[in-house]
Amino acid sequence: MTIFTIDETDNITAFATAEAAAAASTMPFDLFTDQKELAELIAGWPAERLVATYNSLPGVKPVKALKDPKTAAGKIWERVEKLGQMVAPEPEAAKPEAAPTAKPKAERKPKARAEAAKGAPVKGKPSKKATPAKAAPKGKKAAKVEEASAPRGGSKTAEVIAMLQRKNGASITEIMTAMGWLRHTVRGFMAGAMKKAGYTVESFKPEGGERSYRLPK
Image (cartoon, rainbow, N blue to C red; front, side):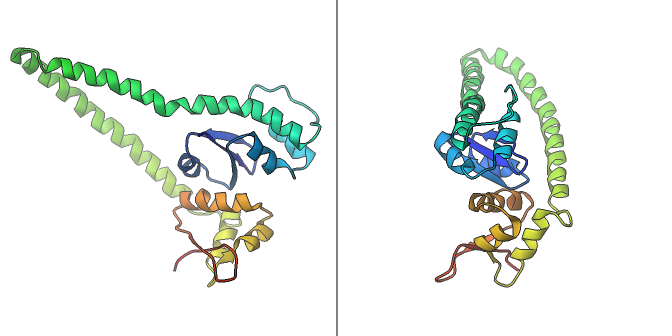
């Protein structure tokens, strides 16, 4: 099932899994998987935001107004559904690639020993080249993640972290009120931006209370 996210700047992105969405997102986002969930999500949005979201989609002809949220949901979904079709095949595309790789190996086994001996150095050369090539970019990516993990002073991430560092943390309603977010946005922030920044957020529900979050000391 394709996962779609809408971030604070009204950008819509398609992901193959919820885990991929959380790992790639650096700011709070809302999730939806079909037109019904999208309609429920944008039901309370002002007309200006509906228009801005639709006009930000690739390949659309900009409009000045949309009749209502239901109409907007239909038009937006018609466009983003195509994005989902582009993302969904990716995991399956890897399977055909693995099959041809396995076949040549199977064909080499029955060949004469002399041919196998000739093939030995050929196998060794690519592996030596591949090892350093793959290691280099991974190191660079890791460095970028570490640099981005520190919250910027005065940012929303920094404000939320301050609330979560309190003795009893903060309830989901307190965070919604302080940040002006929806309930889905708070949950998405905890699973996405906080995890991306390297924080382990503890989720708990006090007896008789509501869902709350805090940072373990």
